[in-house]
Amino acid sequence: MRYLITTVCLLILLLVPAASSTAQSAPAPPESSGVGVRLLDVPTATLEDPRARSYIVDRLTPGETISRRIEVQNHSATTQSVRVYSGAATINGGSFVGGNDPAVNELTTWITLDRPQLELAAGDVAAVSVTIDVPKDAPEAEQYAAIWAEVREEPADGSNVVQASRTGIRVYLSVGEGNGKPADFDIESLTAARDAAASPQVSTMVTNSGGRALDMSGELTLTDGPGGISAGPFPVGQATTIAPGQTGEVLTVLDPEIPNGPWNARVKLHSGLVEREAQASITFPDAGQGAVVAPETSPNATLIAIGVAVLVLVTALILWWVRRRNSVQGSSQRKAKVDI
Image (cartoon, rainbow, N blue to C red; front, side, top):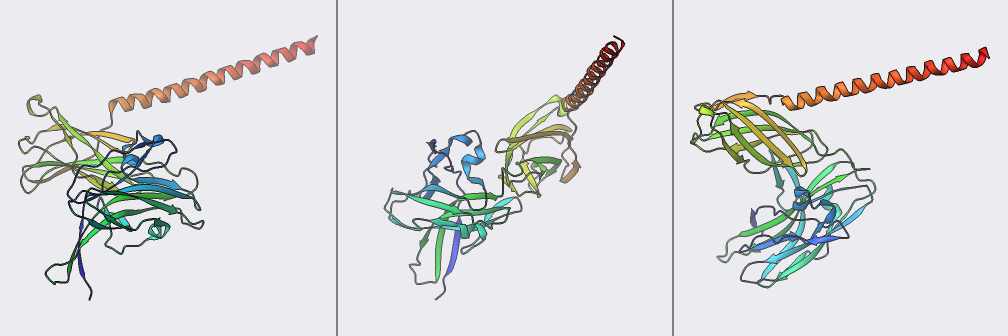
């Protein structure tokens, strides 16, 4: 009999990859009533990169192999039979989406686990080794997957519905020679609006102009409002994931008491160590969506660009003058020797 499986996908934990011979212990995840999973090591080379500390993020050349250790934890009060497996994932609509089991892509066929089935007593933990073996003919691209720890509850009432809950670790793997195109993004526009409950919100459109997927976070601050008031900073909402070449919406919901404005809105966004900020003058509508506003050019950035251009021009003129003087002096010396 085929079972209808209801899968409850828990939050993908913020976990830490192991990629260095000198590593530190990863922080333990918060206690929960079910099964948890985390990476055991933090690579010293990426301690300052919050994104690399959160997920398995790597770039490999075709034919290369890496291993990561994960820890599966039973936080419940009963023994749990835990299935550990890899599943394909995609980036869709600003979210990292793990496919329903079985979900297969090229990346999952490269992943093997040394302990795919665990029996954990209450409070127990177990280490599982995850190996990613990239074939020599692998295509040069970034692919996504998740390492899942899943617990199933068999029906007690004789029905054919099996409850399944799982929690996992994201895998971002880029394949290619060298370091590849670095992560980067551009802030395209800001749009003020009010949702169905009349709460003000700001939508920031971001284009991934780099070569790696982004997990966007940040904050929004309002200044120069009615009567000179300010508000914020407000954290952006649920993290937005944007694949290379795609554009995604980063949404910030504000306090319902904030007046319409006008305001000077400054948004600061980051993914890992890549940070960008932009500002624009916005006004919240009484209802619905307001105008789409392009970010203003920063006066400081303009002055810096002008200064750099002037410095380059002056340097070029000095070099030209020095070369011309040396050329003239050389000609004079050669003429003097001929006259003698």
